[in-house]
Image 1: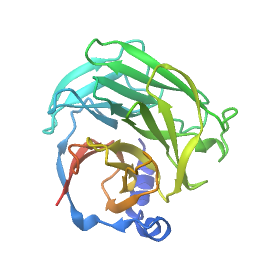
Image 2: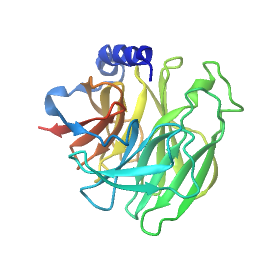
Image 3: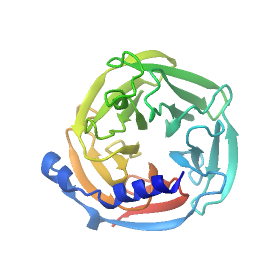
Image 4: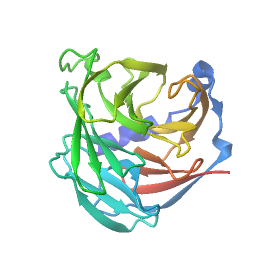
Length: 279
């Protein structure tokens, strides 16, 4: 990434606050409830960490590189030590943006980045870590007729999702031309789908990753500069119960993962690892 892009991300992060989220969506300011600590550096092989997922081994985590990287997952521990490399068969990294996992040994790889607004077809690879098989979930957005490089086309870009129940919940990046984060729900079964907006919320930030707590009671959206926390309502995953917002001014944050029901791991494309601990 060139120096101008680094400056752009630095400015975006520095001026990102929870003010609008507090006023518009009634998020509480909860920074005092969390301790944020830098815990190390990712292995050098993970040069642009863009997603995180838990492995079957509680002490190992998966990540991957951004668009154009090898179709590989990298296993590492919280000390930053590289443990393993897993090549995903019959897959390519067009624009991998986030990871999710279920309780059956499946890792979901979101190949749905569309920063340049040139795509209208998207894929999620469903890789079973137990038998090393890979299946494909393909989808299109119902509202997108064709690729469009104008502001309307940039709505159809995502870098964040997680698995819950039998579904994948996908969140739009929100470029600011239309400052609304849209949520889509997709089946976790292989197939071809057309998805429509299931819920939306005005957010003045770009969403780069998402995760849900192991107990399924809370989910978070990571943005450049802050973290948004929601409770899962009785009706399921939606935006009806915003809980809190706190700033996270730590370079280009691209991936977030619940370590337990309260604490989180965040990685930046520059390789830094942060632990967010609930006090």
